[in-house]
Image (cartoon, rainbow, N blue to C red):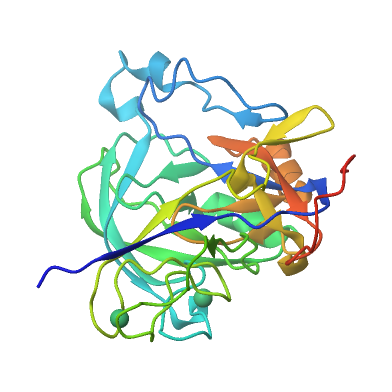
Length: 293
Ligand SMILES: [Zn+2]
Ligand SMILES: [Zn+2]
């Protein structure tokens, strides 16, 4: 029997919001033309690779940047959410294995072609440990095959973001947040916002359609002090524990202003930091106040 369920998920009204504490961190991949033509968001800070990939492409392969591809990873219990059924709240790793390719040039952040994990060299890891930044864990990378130009594989670490997850939790629009066949598994974890792709009890596919701007909730983006923020860039400020590295699901990385200053001061590249907003209350009641700050 083929039976699947779908719900529309909406963002709760963010209530009052504030800017300036956290940034979404993106690690652009090494492709010479990764996102040419893309327009930068307001307030975005980018530290490009120097020399650029474009500049190196005609050079001998040994001068190219080193690359890594995760082929196996194991999530740690440290990232588990206390809510049932079991799932991971943040991506904390026990083990990462993979292959090296490319040249001998070691950038500040080695792009992971497999899972997109942020991978740093031993030099950057030492610098980070000497800083006073908080909310991270370094997991040594196991190199299973070295196809790069490096005779000896350099020591690399995955930078896991362990600060408390702050993404807002979407709600089911006009429906019930549980499998309507067995009622035992939510579509969205009420504790951390994890979306379940299938019911953990009866195995029914649970399709979550992400929607915005319905039921009188103003469509985002929100503009604060001349900067526009997308819906996913409004975080739950009540969950922010003050860490410099704040985690989330796969690919969701946030850093504090202090961490951003550290990246800039030490020219740790390549990164892109996009400002996000923090909402001041988790479940705001009533209409959104005007003149938000
Ligand atoms: Zn959860
Ligand atoms: Zn079910």
